[in-house]
Length: 331
Length: 309
Image (cartoon, rainbow over all chains, first blue to last red; front, side, top):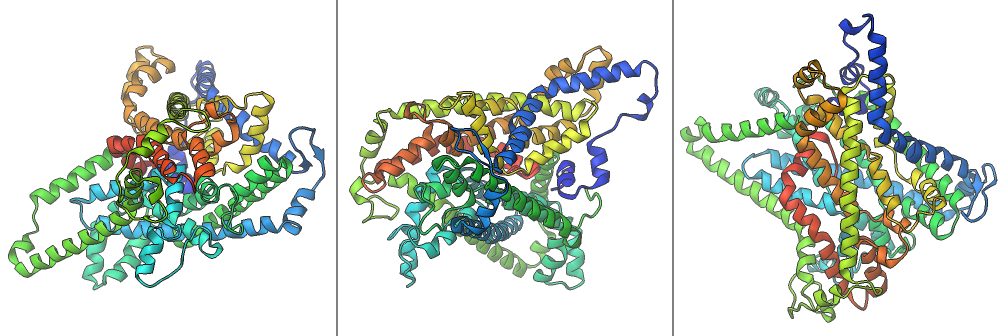
C-alpha cells in the first residue's frame, strides 16, 4: 500500500512514522502560557477518545489478560476457575489428537490457500490492468464475492456446488474425472475450503490493481528497450515494484485465513467433519469452549493460536528486508 | 489518496480518448494484433466472470426449483418453475415468521452502523488532529488491534457479558460498535482526515472555535465520503455476522438471518432444500443490492485503504 499509515504498519518505517504522528510545531515549543493550552489539548484528545479507550481497555486488553489467566485454569463458567498451571497447554500438545489435526488442517488451509488466492488475485489484476476501458465492470463483478463469501448463505451454496452430482462434480465428470461429492470426502474437504477462499480473491485483486496502476510506465518502457520479454519484465519490474503491496496482502491474508469460521461451521453442520477435515481451529475452539464448557482449555488454545499468528507475522516482518522493496516516495 | 486515485483514473480515461496511438494508424498489421489481443483479453475475463458469478446465479435460479428437483437436477435452470419456496419461507421456521428475522438483522445492522460511524469518527479525529500526550503509544496500540485475531477475545468477552446477564439480548453485539472496537474504521477515517487541508481548521481556530466545533462543523462534513464507506461496510459486516449472534442469542425470536439460516440448514437440509436455498438468497439480497448501488464507494475504499471485504 502506498498510504503512509499502511507503510508504518507494514514496515515500521521511522520517517513515515514521524510524518504520521506529527509532532508539535517547533514555534509552539517553549512559549509561556503554553503549558495550560497543552494540558487542555491533551484533555480534549482523551475526551474524543473516551469511547475507544473504554472499548480498548474493557473489550480488548482486559479480556486478553483475563483469557491468559483462564488458560491456566479449569473453568466451566458455572463454578469458579481452578488453577491447574500448565496442564491445559500440556494436554493440547501431548493428549489431544483433535487439536493436532485441527492445527494441521488450519495451517494447510492458511499456508496453501493464501498464496493461491494471492496468485489468482495478481493474475486477474494484471489482466485487468492490461486495458482501462471496460475493466471497471469486471473489477466490480470480481469484488462481489469477497463481500459475501464469509456469509452463511454462500456456505450453503458452496455445499450444494460441491455435493454429489452438483455443478462441480458433473462438470468434472464431463471431462472424465469422477470425484463424486467433495463435501463428505475427507481428502477433498480442504481443497473445497481453499477454493472458497480463492473465490473471494476480489478484495486482494482490487488492492493489487491499485498498486499496479502506480508503477511508472517508463520502467516497463526502459525494460522493453533493453530487450526484456514479458516474463522478464514481470520478474524485474512488476514483482519488485509491487512487493510492498504483496507483503501487505500476504500479512492480512494469512491473519484473515486463520479466522475462518462460518463457512466451516455451516458446511459441516457444526461438526467439523468429514473426519475432522473442516475442524478449523476457530471451530474447534468454539466447540470446546461453548459446547463442552471447557473455557480454560479453549482459552489456552486461543493463546497458542495468538502466538502462532504473532510468530508468522514476525517471520514475515523479518524476511521482508530481503524481498520487499521500498523505492523512496515515488508518488 | 481517494481524491488522487479518482483523478488518476479520470486522467487515464481522458488520455485513452484523445490520444489514439499514432503507430496504430500507421501500421494496419499492428491494429489487427491489438484487436486480437482485446478479444483474447475479453474472453479470458468473461471466463473468470462466469466462474465467479456462477454460484450466485445458481442460487438465484434454484429458488424457483420445486423441492423434489434438488438432488436430481443440480443444474442452473429449474425444470418446473415454481414460487412455492417463497411461500414456504415467508411462513418462517421454529414458530417465528420470516419478517422477524429480517427485522432483527435490520435492527442490528442499522444500530451497528450508527455506533461504528459515531465512535470511529470521534476516535479518528483525536488521532488525526489533536496533539495530546500519549498519542504515539495509543495510535500504535490501535494499529496493533488491527492485526489481533479475534479468537483470544471471544471467551473472555462471553464470560463478561454472561456475568452482566446480557446474553440473549442485542447488547453484546451492539455495545462494541459504540466503542470503536473495529480498528479498520478508525484507521480508514484517520487516513482520510489527515488528507484534509488544515487551512479551514486554522481559520476556525482563529475565529475561536474549539475542537468540538471544528470536528462537528468542519471535519465531519468534509469526510462524508469516508463516513459513507464506513457505514456501508459496517452494515454488511453486521448483516453477515454469524459468530456473534451464534454466541449471544439463544431464543429464536431474537435470531438474525444468518442464525435462522442455520436452522434451515440443520433441520431440513435433506427434506426441504428449496426453502433453505430461498432463505439464503433472501438473506443475501440486501447485501447484493447495497453492492450494486454503492459499488464505487466499496471498491474505491478497498483500493485506497486496503480494507478487505
